[in-house]
Image (tube, rainbow, N blue to C red; front, top):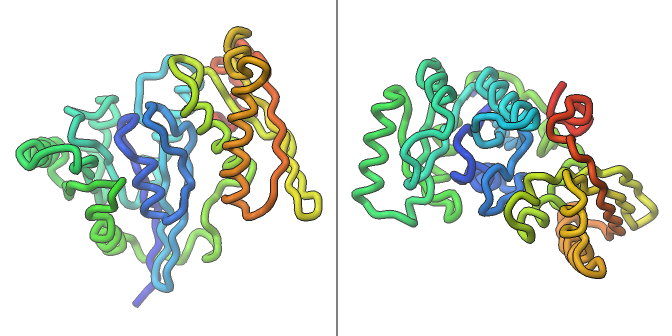
Length: 293
């Protein structure tokens, strides 16, 4: 049997479960998961290897109409994922009538690559609604295989993996067989800190924040990390820090525990908060943060 390899890219609206699916397929917690929309901002690759195949999965930001240059950068990740996909996983859920960005759906409908439409969260619905959604998506993308799943409870995920392998093109591996992802450790550290912000703050705060790892240094058995949380307004800085610094300390403690579990080493984590009013519309800063080339 010849070796197979390919890019299997996950596309869909915000908050339909793309990151949960990605983590299930890869078997590692690479994408942060919260109940808030727009949790994923970057294209995150997770690599699954077997003797006979290599699958390079991509979790992508939820499709949306851009309001900031930050959003434009996020949609570029989606566009690139559509361009290089060997297999496309279109993610929706039982509550969604159609994709949040009609132009992206139209483009997918006109593409000619193996496509799976995955209707997620079926554990929260009934048979009649699920069947209705299946028929709707068969009409929208006739060539696609439409499948009900529950990413959270791993329902139909193993069958999906078998079907994906069937659709992969013959190819040598794209990455060394011992690699798990294309992202550096600093990226995952910043994502773990950002996840805590998403979990503990409401309204505009999480969407006004960016997390940058300024220093990541191995010091014997200890990893020393210094990170900045960037916010858009002075009032947000006060909210992030909290009374007597208690909220920032809580974020740091929870993030440190996750980072230690992820890298398997003790961590000393320092967090600072800085105001940068226009970072979401500043192209030079967005390039530095990895949203633009």
